Image (cartoon, rainbow, N blue to C red; front, side):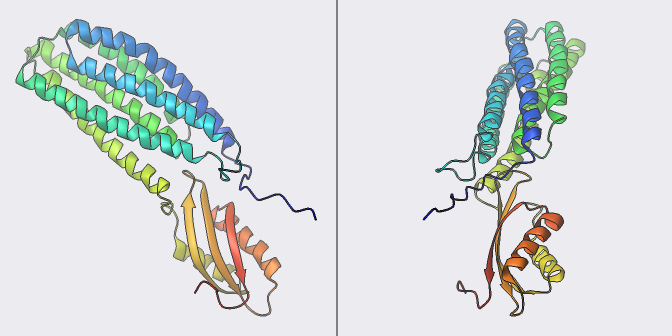
Amino acid sequence: MNRPPPHDHAHPDPASSKDSGNERRVLQALLLTAGFMVVEAAGGLWSGSLALLADAAHMLTDAAALALAWLAFRVARRPADARRSYGYHRFQVLAAFINSFAMIALAGWIAVEAVLRLADPVQVLAGPMMIIAVVGLAVNLGSFALLHSGDRENLNMRGAALHVMGDILGSLAAIIAAVIIIYTGWMPADPILSLLSAGMILRGAVILVGRSAHILLEGTPEDFDGAALRRGLMDALPALEDVHHIHAWSLGDGNTLLTLHATTKPESDPELLLGRIKAVLLQRFGIRHATVQIETRACPDR
């Protein structure tokens, strides 16, 4: 007897074209970041500026992070298979998780270097430092504009944008430090402003690691309200006796999956009701993939 093929959850993804645009933007930002990183590192060594060297090191990790984000978009397009029936969408969240830890490590390195510079100040050439920092700011703003014009709810894009935002902060810190040194000669401005940018980078990284870890741990999506979903189904479908065992998780931002049990009233048609439940879930709650267990008697799991 011929059996139907197994269900592999590989439903058409309406976000695939959005991911394609995101992938292109990340690649363009990667090329900009990697190209200027070499210039900024050379300028930091020449001028003796920790702020420039820290930003160059940041751009190096950013280039690696953007490459990882770009790879994540490509891997996520791979179709579902026997071992990964949901496909590879979660790889983007994993990339964001890894990127956030790279940012935390970078913030720690900048902080240590800044403290050492405060204990033993280094002479900085403020003029060259200013020129390189201004050019770097322009490059970083261009990269951020590319990423910000993409999908702002995608965690992978948010991770990439966070890295570039850290570059912007680093460039601003270098510019302000150069201005202070030019007009006052106060060398500690360089490591102090580096510490400030490290603190802001750390804050964004901690938020991102929390969000990505929540998804990797199968946490309930942030905008999901199980009680509201139950009420919505019960109000829309009088043939329902009860809705319970509601579980929701996400493959990534905006891609909620759901399982639930639905107990029907004796006079209802279970097959017809199943279709109506699916329709309500899609139209009212935007949930495209739901596994619904229809029960005509008491729930066997209770």
